[in-house]
Length: 108
Image (cartoon, rainbow, N blue to C red; front, side, top):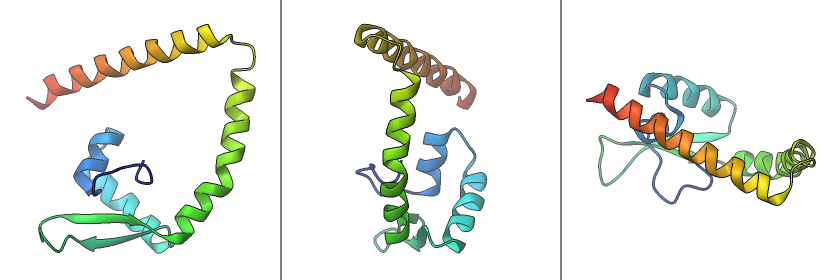
């Protein structure tokens, strides 16, 4: 998620994407930082924001697993037609939108 994000990634934004609390994201981030996958830094222009930045090690790991991930997905969906895959994607997208709507009612 962080790799493809065009925005600066904070604990709060990542928590929203993952559907998790800021504290859980912070704990995960601290673990990933210890393993060398991310760096955690304070945003210079807004000292209240903590930024999560991928390291070279994270990018290398991502590249290493990308091909395997693609192979797994191709294997899973090999029996589906393109139309069925598009239908599945549309249904999952609608389901996700419904879950987001429900989450918004809980946050009000």
